Length: 348
Image (cartoon, rainbow, N blue to C red; front, side, top):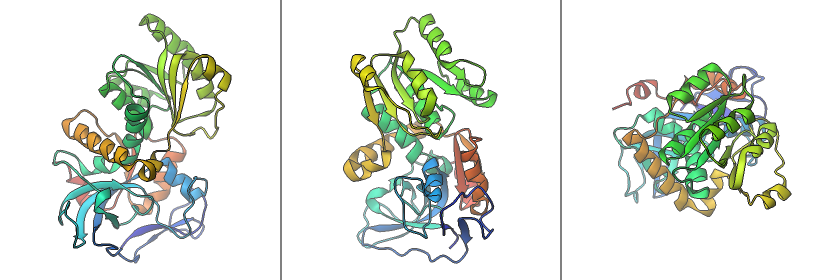
């Protein structure tokens, strides 16, 4: 089978996967994985999603460092290709999606039936592949951790990225007043088209002044929940608009800078700081992830959320795909299609 294999650590954007200097290569003859248990399911992958964590893993800068060589990749969608003798939840030909620690940048992947989700017929398969990690992260953060409710004010930093767009949409489904921060005309226009209550363009506006003016105009008391996948100076600035009793969701550090949240101010203002490492729920509270993804697939089927696909590439174009993430060119999700024909015809 065809698979993207990481042979050494380094920057996958520097050159194409066929170059000897690239840390990744496209193997055309990688072994098709065998069923490894009675409840195992082999999936023929249609599409897989790129997440910033995948990029960091290849760089060797992620908190989890798999031994070399490895096939990167996390969330994916596909068609059930083979099942173990004790599989009861799925049949060959079923449309499924899931997420893995590694391995989705390949034509086939094996997972236990307990980790797979049936994709509703009304759902596009490429969209389903983009859903688990980005939307799952935002859903667990906002719904499970922050308990976001109708009428609360949600401030989303990095709002045009994968998790940011997910947070914006989930915030609207929850009935929150959503303030989105992004940079660039195209990103701002997309966020406005999604019905965001207030959008701030980092390129032309002062974030704090703009947010304060909106809060004043709407006669609000401040921001209830800060959703932060960015970090750095923007986090520090955003604390100026948080109200007493606010919640801070630490999602990631796309800026490259880890912010300091002053404990004395958190004490005085009764802030709650949530660290959110979504993947660890699989170990500690897997039922939370299962319930979350099932609800998100239901929302997707009902049209309550939409997946914005920025670019779709092949495995041989992985350097371009990772480049979009590195250079923040992506608006929404960047995808790799393993089965172009099925991917193009997957919207039923």
